[in-house]
Image (tube, rainbow over all chains, first blue to last red; front, side, top):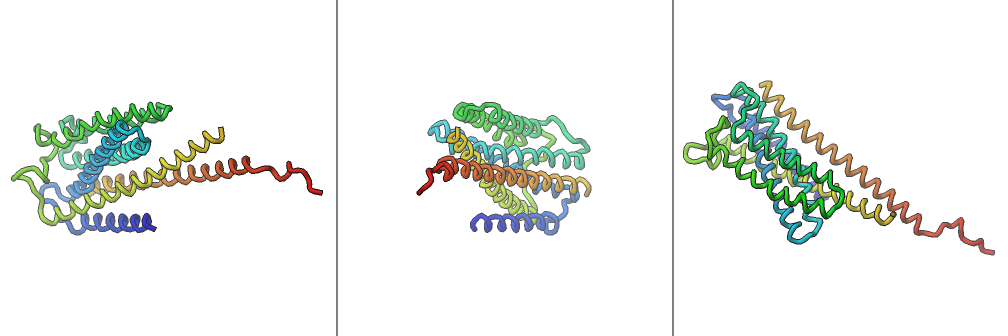
Length: 222
Length: 55
């Protein structure tokens, strides 16, 4: 029941977010309509940061307690982090092509984001390659913690270095900021994507639970 | 407008694709769990055919 309410709340939030992006938010003067990619692009980036933070917490939790549930949370969140980071890396170049007339440039923000994606793809590959559960959880916890170091670098890249990527519009100092309607839609999209993350995390943990139950049954049957 | 359409289309394709894959995988695993549980329960119960006939 609760899950159904959650799913409907998410559906409504995403519908309102889409309506906000296309109907309520004003057209940006210099870039035009393509700037509307910003709302889902930045929201995806935020969720990928959140997901990798959960990986880091789960990894520390596993190394501290050796309880598998921490590892399951970290693994589930890593998969979602890669999914949302992929969305960032897909929508970013589409926006770049339209605004800068190039798909990609090796500037600090783009490169560190690609590195972040590669780190967590490697994390998932590592998990699929190591069969022994404790060894797998320990090795991936180490990668999960070290990989998180890249998140503040991605965040700070447009603040510390000169980049092609636009300057921050939120928490970017006095020169930054958004038009009030754009800001409202932006924060609503952030909230909707955060809800989507927790919905998907719940589904992904159910899958991990089913997999564990199955492994346990096979052990009993053997 | 074309770039905007492609970006949003890809976002939804990826999200729905992932959700669909997750649901399919979970359902398959749950079915496997149920069938294995039934098999294990069948193995632990005595087979009625193998019981001695009552006179």
